[in-house]
Image 1 (tube, one colour):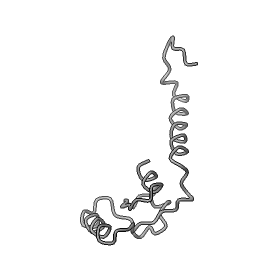
Image 2 (image 1 turned 30 degrees about the vertical axis):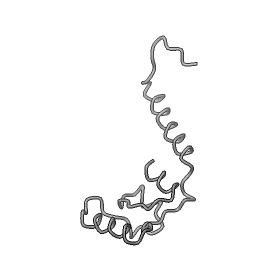
Image 3 (image 1 turned 60 degrees about the vertical axis):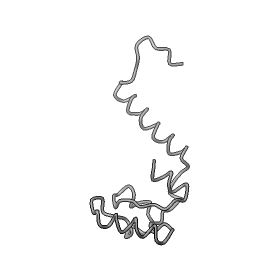
Image 4 (image 1 turned 30 degrees about the horizontal axis):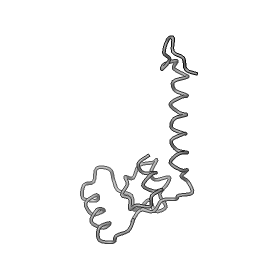
Length: 94
């Protein structure tokens, strides 16, 4: 959610080269290795120097924050339903 919110706001982003991020990135070669401290240091320095995002993301692949929140909530609801957990006895859920 944090990445999606940052993309939505248009703020400069530094992100890790992981599958869920890579599928949204227009220039995946600019993504950083998760544990490469030198790359992250350089990435921060580059953003401060250039004053712009070096990683570009496709806003068309991302719904609104509300849409994403609803999707996440529906996944949780499905998991609760399928496992039968989360039910309270004698609770009025109406």
